[in-house]
Image (cartoon, rainbow, N blue to C red; front, side, top):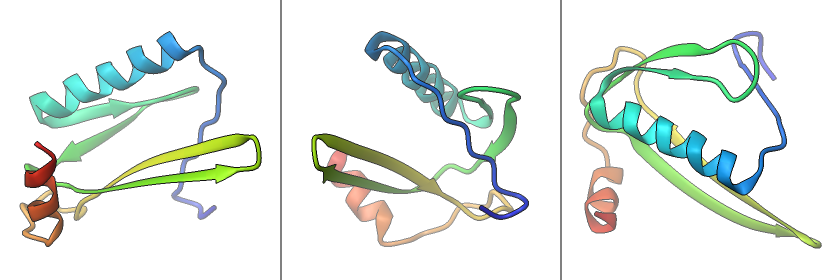
Length: 91
């Protein structure tokens, strides 16, 4: 983990996880900035109109790992990428 990287880990109930994801989704839908925290202090991020999104599902023995990753330029400027085509197919 780099000096600028923040990692938070916590155990949540299914309902708590759903509520956290819903609150994050609402903030992303509004745009502008979003405050992100799972445990500990929150981080405020500037959001662009378009994001690159990656979904990864991996089984590990008797566990499953689900990763949802969003990427965007630090400047917050709109960026056209091949991901925009895939995102349009999801919606």
